[in-house]
Image (cartoon, rainbow, N blue to C red):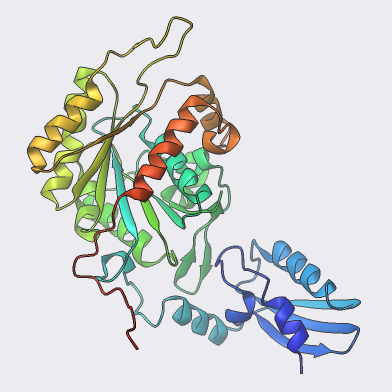
Length: 367
């Protein structure tokens, strides 16, 4: 019997799948005596990027129980990999979009803007990381196919691991991340038309192992183009978070990004005003004017027939820009920065927003 070894190995979590290796079919034969143990560990693929961390964690876990530890690192067979993908999909068919399921409780949030340059991607990354730091299980989908920047902003350099026809997204700051940037070499531009764009964003939903998420944040491209429409159809239960700046012109354009969500069935979750003011010794300086966020919220309230909240105003922060350039979200690198504090406050507001449970099974047993 190898009860002691299995109990120790059950504490080892696969860093990509976030499940115990004992539940993933990764533990092979075990030979156990009072003081010694030899175990075989099966990686999902040859060249698995997590191999060193898994082996280190296995040795550390076994060393707490046994004096002598030997670990044989090998790779799953084709049949074992197929069995793993079936298990991960929960016996659902391939090309399955879990977020479109009636009973799925993941809060899907589209982060949109009418134009580029308002800090949408930077805020999306920081909101995702802030939510994860608050204990939420978070996924981040970079749907800005032409202007992808999420990998750089969150500091992910590795590509997804491919297990059969399932992609395991890289994880940074406890956030699962997927982006077209992982599949483009040397910062090459993406020159695709509508059908290819739709296929790409659909694969990000159906071919990626997202697991059980509390939040899926989707960084939409600016404007109201093909990707926004496709995702609106693929994720009908999503809600839209609109990013604007205080400028009157920017606010007018931002209204359109919220309005396109209404046309494809998404509720408006709220509005964030970025670059709201610059702190100085004499108080806030409104470099880009004022009132843009309030104007967008008021107009979207009128269009939707439901009150749309201005969820926060992010101050201009040099450190926010520096942290983005350094591939380290400011909510991690400098949580005391005023911009980081406001972003974390908004993340808490998102957590406090009631889930839409109408028509969903809560899977509560009365027996």
